[in-house]
Length: 137
Ligand code: FES
Image (cartoon, rainbow, N blue to C red):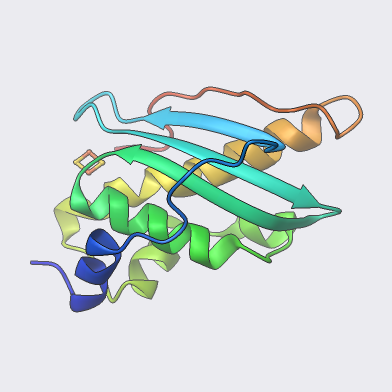
């Protein structure tokens, strides 16, 4: 059902944890299954300098969150806003059709975190945005 790479990210998720001085903290959830993700983002100028996450989710959600953090770390905000669920799934060697929606959690959280941060008045406020059911379906 899952590729070897997906299983590697499930068994050894990258970037699990919290960033105490994060610039954006985003909580997203899928109301259908109850899975949820807490994503921390740290920015340096327009670069995502660090990101970590905590998750209660299915294997596909864990693997895609892990892969998403690997992909966006070091990326410009502009590029990260262009990241799609499909690109993350492809980077993992694919996901079963019925699990594609699980990648929306992490990608949606990255997009929401960047938007929260960039829409804050001076760009230095911490963003504690919360979104539910981002891009699922
Ligand atoms: Fe809920 Fe995968 S089944 S995110």
